[in-house]
Length: 267
Figure 1: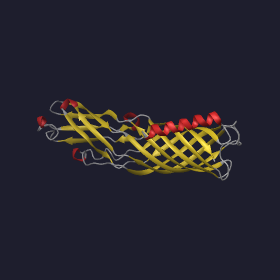
Figure 2: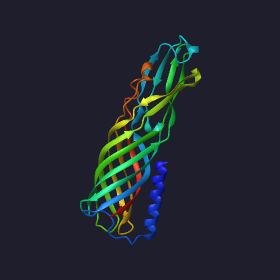
Figure 3: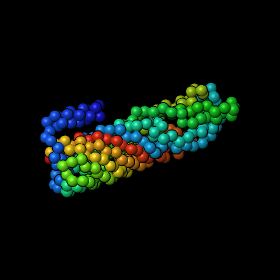
Figure 4: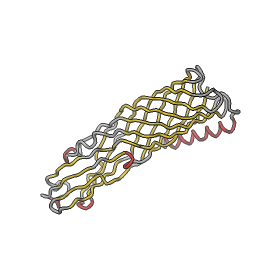
């Protein structure tokens, strides 16, 4: 709901500005000038795993399915990436900017990122008694993260026209708890909705390149892309540690390519 409201507000304000703005002139950075932007876009993961791989022996499947009491198995879990489990995320946010000159500015950015839950085959369970490997599936709850970062942006070319820029930013990202369900359908085994990673703050940083398009004296549109890094998450082993899988959630870092459009107002 928050994402939809933010996007609707941004589109409405953008439309009004386009309809009533003056011809393009000196929109953009200026010494002592404050600016405000709304942003929206997608965030495409290119590196980083939701979980690592591991091999663990389960001497008795009886606690997971009484019908399999006395039957042992070897869990063979493979690493699975953010791209494979979650795919692209949507991102929304806002930015406050202070101009240092007509070429440089500092900014603070607040951003929300969201990807829907994902279900994949995470590995297999080899059962010696059957001499076969049964597929193991994992379902992971929505990926939700809030970022608060500060940065520096430098513009090229003279004010009044289209201006490319480069920026760097650093800060922290709070990721919501991720819960998981693990299933071996062929053995009628399920570990449902258990903790996987904790909610918490980690270091994040990014580099952006983009172009500012002046639309009026105080309004402009911005297109940008870059690279975003979010550090490892804290794993919760309370449910999976007893299966010998306590190491698979000691990861969670994410490297992605955000692509964003911004509506910017100068004051």
